[in-house]
Image 1 (cartoon, helix red, strand yellow):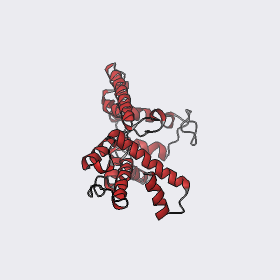
Image 2: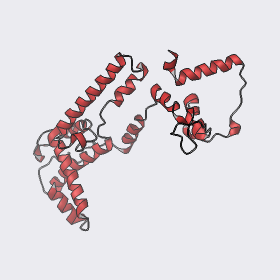
Image 3: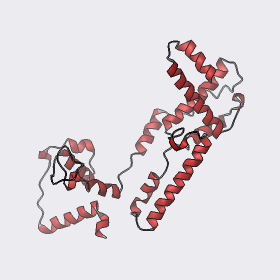
Image 4: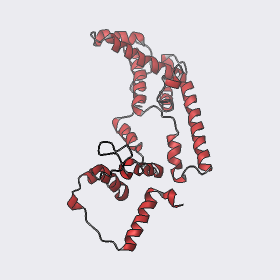
Amino acid sequence: MGERVCRRQRDTNPVKTASLCKEEERNYRVAAELFTSLIGDRRAVDVTEDDLLRFRGELHRVPTLFGRGTYRNMTGAEAVARADAVTASQQAAVMARAEDGHLDRDNLAHELRDAEVPRLSMKTVNKHLDTIKGLLRWLRTTMKVAIDRDLPDLRIRYDQKDIGRAANADREAFSSAEIRKLFASPCWTGCAGVDHRHRPGFKMVKDAKFWIPLLAALEGVRLGEAAQLLTTDIQLRCFDQDDAVGAAIRLRRHLFPLANE
């Protein structure tokens, strides 16, 4: 891999800085370590299509912080085992809180997902796949190594549509606990001023930052829809006393459901 980086620099970009060459070499080294650790120490000529498909699947188990923090100096397999153990421990703690009644059952699935250790994104998985496939292609075409000719062209990377779908799937709705925490903040209970909404105080600044989140929570409108509303779009609806009391109770139950138990 080091030889390929040097030849690539000499042949395609001779003015490339030494630091960029080192970064490219590091990327190759990381991809190689992950492959040998997760799949096995293979000779290049023995790599199969199944190996590459397994590599893609195993990459999704590698923690995002691989090579840093608590995962420093670990192999890919060691980092995966550590991340799985941490996830299991954190999720067990969440279940214990739920069984003790300290966690709203409606938020259990949300809390369990938050307890999972973040893993490599599709974009990073693509980078490591491209590195290994690029090496195989170079060995076959330039170094005339007997690599399976179908491997370099194997379509296993994620395209932009897949990556975009995954990003949208990560945008989860607020949990009930998060909504209660949001509307119990100084912006809605009393802040220090328009430029200090995060600090508790006695001022109520009822501008767009006050009303738009309330509209989104109660009406389900999109941010852009709420932001385009004019004051003339807001209609005053007359309630009798019973309706007003009922509306207030419903609002309280929506924002602070546990307070009514």
